[in-house]
Length: 248
Image (cartoon, rainbow, N blue to C red):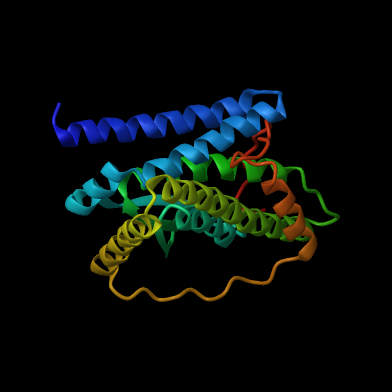
């Protein structure tokens, strides 16, 4: 097996392990087991990113970097979905830009190949969980229901970003302590992130900032942060999954 083939196999194994852990967390009735499965998934991802061989490989192999398209859709929840995807991407050194098309919004994610795989898997899983919470919300009018659900998804995205950042810091701190040379680990991680930034510049040049999203409601936002505390990122997983529509 060549080095490149071995790396591809290792990457696929990581993604499959993360997916299986998230599925196990979804199926168990024991919240402590769900939390343990979810925490292990986040730990695996963070450890993979800071593996010395992986850092060296990504520095030498430009094919480690790529772009992934993820369809976001259309309707009232588009910007909130983008917020969730961006929060997950930020925790994995994946940069997200988007383009509004007649058929709906498409996000373009740039980063290291394995990070892109993991971000896509986690976005799909976490969006399904958020959708389950949103589907339970009913208000006196359709407009009020839509506004509350939208605020919930924004709050969910914000808290998920914080939880992922916490997991990342914990693993990186442990790796620095184990290496005995925190500065060298930090330098390599910074270089890895900078390579993504350079790649993004080469791919897209200057990217125009989107207009700020419309204001959200405090009650819905708070419900969303509480929902995120029950998510698969080191928290209890919801068993119920229901898709939500375009915002109507």
